[in-house]
Length: 71
Image 1 (cartoon, rainbow, N blue to C red):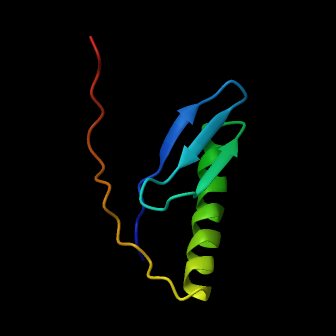
Image 2: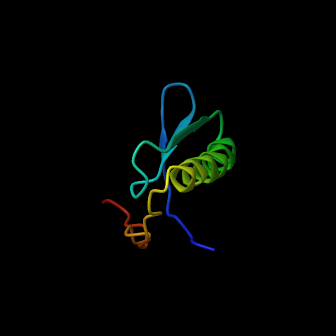
């Protein structure tokens, strides 16, 4: 199983999530938890489509790092 880092951003209406290594793979949710759950479904759907089209599934390139507090 491959772990993909997702980025979550607060929007005016809730939260948006995307996966930098899977272009076009995005999700929305009312809460962070909703966005994460929706993104899990979006990643599975996206990868399934890639496999059906015979496209290679990209290896994760994004690295998870510690959060840095701005001063």
